Amino acid sequence: MPITIETDELTPLRTVMRDLQLSVSRYYVGAASGEDLGALVREFITHTQTLNDWLSNAIGDAVSYKLHFGAPRHPRSDYIDAVKYVRNVSQHVMHVVAPDDEVRLVGGSLGMRFYARWDEVPVAVDAKLRPGTQRLKPTYDAMLFRKDVMGTMMEVLRFYADVVPSIVHRDSHGEWTGFPLMNQPGMSHALHPEEPSDWAEALEWMDSRRPGGSSRVICGQVTVEGSPYVVGFTFDGRHSFAAFSETIEQINFDISLGFPYFSGDLLTNVVVANEQFPDALQGVVLSSREAIETWGTAESGVEVRDDWMAFEDDSWGKFVGLENKLIVPESMRYEVRRARRLNALKPPSAVRRR
Image (cartoon, rainbow, N blue to C red; front, side, top):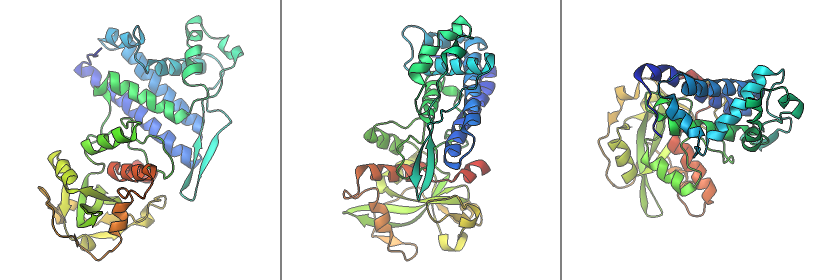
């Protein structure tokens, strides 16, 4: 059921949605940095229920919103009711719902990550609640209790994006504010609320949207397994945290979407800036002395040509092969492609500086 959002309702709703998106992003960062996950969870709960309250009671078309909780129910509406239960527990009873103590710690040389689950709400606590809230406990137990916190947060974002897509807060490039999340090798969780769970569908989704970042600088062409690939660096403003490789067809499609590709003298205009981002795990961080537009030439399209490189480097073939060679496991090829295409290699400090 489409929900009509009036012009004067859009800005406040989009502002709270931005707060909600950033609370999920901050939780993800906190799960890798040892922050107080309970405080981050409560921030998420507050923003989720604020949106739910406003859409249920404050907007002019609240009736259409409430239909998603009727029959038939929206498949993700139970997540909203479950969070509502948590909010009511925290607001009306002296009991704080937080991640449980059985936190799984995974990782290694590429960084650690905590996987926390929603804790139990004791029967004695539930008994102190109003009957209307008590009726939501089975939903909480089914949808959140002992479920991964990060995964359920993403489901809440997907619910709101589905039922009221106009309130999703986006940056100047049209990307979700706070996303994609930073890639961490070996971790299979979604980096974006729109990312399909099926690999084939996810690859199609990534190729059909603008790449992450604000622009790319082309450095050459290399042929791998008989196919030509254009390579270079993706920039977010004046910083690059990742290189890229794309087919000729993909680059021309990206350009047709309005995404800027440039050619230019990278060695003269860019310096290494790893000292500014000590938490960057992916390797070299580049910084352009000036805006890319001041020294780069915008490409209107690219064509197949003989292999070339703007500077001597024989590692590009191996770089391209990580997401294309059949000898590389499919799961690894997908993770590499996702990180590069979404530009999901920005360290948390880069997210905070934007």
